Length: 347
Image (cartoon, rainbow, N blue to C red; front, top):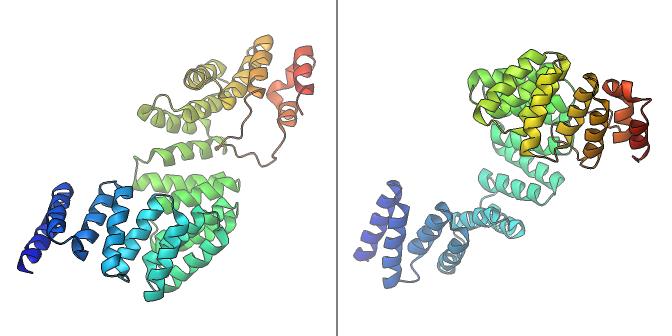
């Protein structure tokens, strides 16, 4: 018994020092002496999961459970490991076992909710997020997760209520501010969306996603120069970011600086030659500088690569054909045979 205690103490000390691989070796030494040792199996499983060997950790969790079948910590850790392996149904069954023993275990409740989201069972997930909030009403992570589920179902007003509840607890939480900004943008309220992203960037100026989305909000509120500054900041970090290049080009279109726009779209197309947004807006620029044949040719290529874009906020949800016909920047092409032939070929 004394020798076992020495091994276990050594394992715990190595874990505290984050020497996980060394700790695994000590677990193995103990398991040579006592292969059914609960603590050695449980610790080795946790350590393997910690260093990313999730598959290898599973058998050791089950060995630990053979010794102590209802240990809630092992059941919970096994469930989270299964979750990390995308084995959501198995994870849920184990979270349920934990919750039978500990009905108010907020981590088990939330992780079960997350697994339900992964399975597309959003209504059930929300009920479990609500259950978690009954235990701890001020958990901003849970409030955000619930809001994100609503946002994923395009219920952005409900999502914003969740984000506002989180911000009433911590007004300086960057993730919440960004989540609210995204939902406001989806509702078309870009002025308020910009305020959220500005607030987020005051707290964390290095949040490049917030900087990008602030640029989008500025573009939609007739502030193209400020939008360009945002996209430039993003491009300093990643000069081949096609989203930033395309949206910077769009901002230049608003300023009627078509040559700068074309440069942005060409750079984006060098990275992604099938990028619909870059081709579509490049054709707009070519029209404005009188290169009509080239514009029609580029637009024709764009129509072959028409895919919904994550940063499009088109409240009209027009078909591509109607979008082109209603686009003022293509107005001078209305009498061009090649243009009308292209449009008529679209469904």
